[in-house]
Amino acid sequence: MLQIAQVLKSNGTDGQLLLSFLDIAPEDIDLQEPVYIVFDGLPVPFYFESFTPRGNNRALVHLTGVRSLRDADELAGSPVYADYFVQEEEEDFTGWQVFGEDGVRVGEVSAYEDIPGNLCIWVRRPDGTEVLLPLHEDLVRSVDEKTGTLTLSIPDGILNLQ
Image (tube, rainbow, N blue to C red; front, side):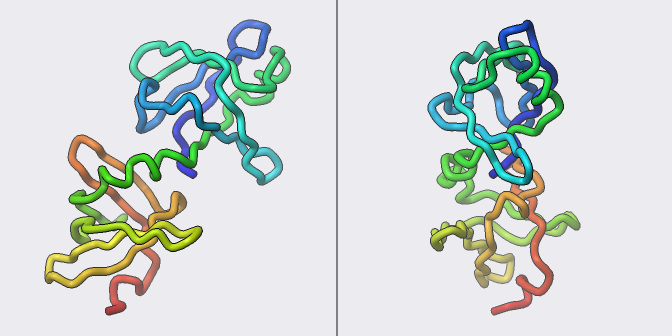
């Protein structure tokens, strides 16, 4: 799952929340899919009951089960995650440039490998070889749609395997 938003605060007394979205525009949210908030180390799914965009990166929302000011205040400051973001964007990553956290270019995404429970990307390196990299949300550091770049935290030694 990738963090897509942050709960800024409650709004009103009926459980409405103000969300601030990170690297995704509110209009790009799939309102039919759940979002997740972590409680006691476990992601808990919530569905949107209402969604009103406010500016470029905020929205007023009602989530299932959040019915009071007390419920909403409990969520204030919480990160909001989605697990559909990477899956919907798979096709868009083909041809993107991949960089390590150190800023060094790794190569270009050439294909996907859907290993059960572990989505991976094939990256064609500048020398023409290809390397298989995990595309796990914990390893994705940034996604820049404008420049078509993906920055990953690449596990030590993985680029040296051939």
